[in-house]
Length: 287
Image (cartoon, rainbow, N blue to C red):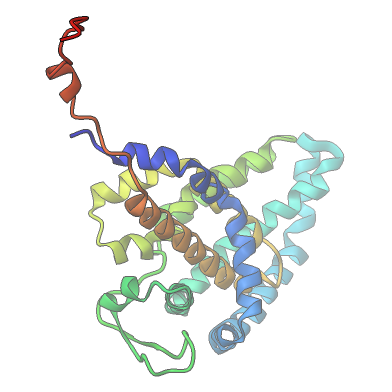
C-alpha cells in the first residue's frame, strides 16, 4: 500500500505556508507576553536588574568606543560610518550581555516562559514528562514546578560567541556588510531557540540535525529577527523573554501541523482489481 503521508502533506500545504512565516514569531511573542499578565512577574525577578546593568554597559561602550570606531569606519564607509558604528557597538554590547546572561543563569527564566506558553496553548503532554506540574494552579506560570530533568532553553556556546566576534568586522563592508552580518549570525542562532523543543521531543543528535536542515531558512529568518530585537538598547533583556515566547508559539503551530497531517483524510488506494479481473467480452446474443 502506498505511503499516505505525502498525500496528506500536499493537502495541507497552505498550513505549511503559514507556519513558514517564521520571522513573525518574535513579534508575536512580544504581543503574547504583553497580553497575558501572568508572564509579567517572570520579567521582574531577574531581568529588570540585568536590564539596568546592560544599559550601563552600553552607556560605557558608546561613551568610550563609539567615536573612535566612527573615525575608523569613515575610511571605508564615508557618511554611513555613523550608522554602521552603532551596529558595531551594539554587537560588542551583545557579546558582553550574553556573558552576563550566562553568569546570572537567566536561561531558567527563558525555560519557564517557553514551557508556560506551551501549557497555556494546550501542549501539557509535551511538557509534563520533563517537569512537575501543579494542575490546580490558576494560570500556566504558576503550574510550573521543578524540572525533573535538565532544562535548558538555549545552551551557552563559546563557539557561537567567538563566531559573533569574528563576524563583527563584516560591518566594515559598506552597504551590505551589516545586513550580511545580521543574517549570518541569525542563521547560527536560530536553531538554538528550539533546543528546548528538541529535548522535549527526545530527538537524537542526528534527528535534531535533520530537523534543523528541513527548516534551515525558517530558522535563519527567526534568528535574524531575534538578533535585531536583542540589539535594541535597554529592551534587549525584555526581548530575550518575548522571543522565547515566540519560539514556543512556533512550536504550537508545528505540533498543530503534525496533528492535522496525521488526522487528514486520505483517499483509499486502488487495489488494481479491475486490471486483474477485466469484464466479460461484449456479446450481442439476445438469448
